[in-house]
Image (cartoon, rainbow, N blue to C red):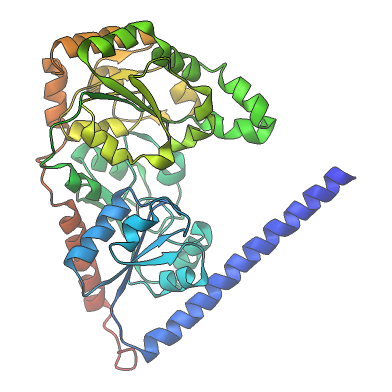
Length: 418
C-alpha cells in the first residue's frame, strides 16, 4: 500500500511540474509577443551550456559577443550556485537558470546558442515542442559539445531538434552527420568556439592528463541499487579495475619519478559519483575534483594525454600534442554507443592499449622520445583538422548574422511590427 502511494504521489508531482513548465512557457510566449510589439530594443542572444556550467563552446561564444559586439544584448543562462558563475558575471548579463526571466528571454531571443541540445531553454522538450509548433521563430544554434566520431542515437535520429545551425569542426565530421541526421541542412563547418583559446599557448607543464569518458551503465547503478551497493558494483567493472590499476601501478610511479612528471586523473562528470572509489599511493598522482578544475585549462597545461573513447582526444590533438589510448572494456560499442567513421585501430591518433601494463610501456616509450609522437601518429594528428586559426567565434557569428538577414529579406516586418 505504501509503495503504491509513493508511486501515485511521484506521478502527481511529475504531472504538476510538467504542467507548471507548460504554463510558464505559454505565459512567456504571450508576454514576448506583447513586448515585441510595444518596444524596440537590442536583439537578445541567449547563450548556454548545461544549467550549471560555463566552460564549453557556449562560454567562449558568449565571451566573444560581450567583447566584440556590444550592439547585441548577450545573456548567459546559468544557475546561481554554479562554480562557474563568476566567469560569466564578469563578462556580461546573466539570467538564473529556470527562473521566469529565463523563460521570457528564451521566448524573446532573436538567437539561442548552446553547447547542448537544450536550445538554451529551461526545459528542452517543452521548448522544442513550442518551436516545432511555430510559436517561436528565433535562430536555434547548436554549438556542439565535442567532435562527433560515434553514433549518438538521441541526437542523430530525433526530429524534435529544429536546429537552424549546427557547428562542426572537421569535413569528415560534417559529412558523417550530413549522411545520418534528419536536420543535415543546418550543418556548418565553422570550427568550435572554444578552439579559439587553443592558440599562442605557453609551453606545457611536465604533466600527463588521464581523462576517460563515462559509461551509460554507471548512471543506472545508484538509482537501482543505492549508493553503497552501486559503489561495490562499480569496483567490479573492467573500467574501474583497469584505470585503478594504472593509478596504483608502481611502474607508473617510478616512471613519473624518473622523468619528473605529474599525472592528473580527471573523471568525466557522468562518472563523478564514483570518484571516491579511486586513490593513488604516489605524490605525483593527483585525483582532480571535476567541479574544482577547468577541463580546458588542464588540456592546455598538460603535455601528454591518456584517454579511452573520449572525444576530448580531438581537443588535445588540436594543439598537436601526443596521446595514447587505454581501452578497458571491449564491449564499449555494444553497451554505450555505436561506432561511426573513426576507428581507433585504423585512424587512432596514438597507440592503442587495453591494460595498465601496456599503457605504462607505451608511456615510457613516449617519454623516452621526449614526448614526441611516432611519425605515423604525428601525421594523423596534423591532418585531422582543416587549416586552423582562431576565427571560429567570428565565423559562427557571421554565419548566424547571414541567417538573420536572409530571414528578414524573406519575411519583412510590417509597419505595425516595426
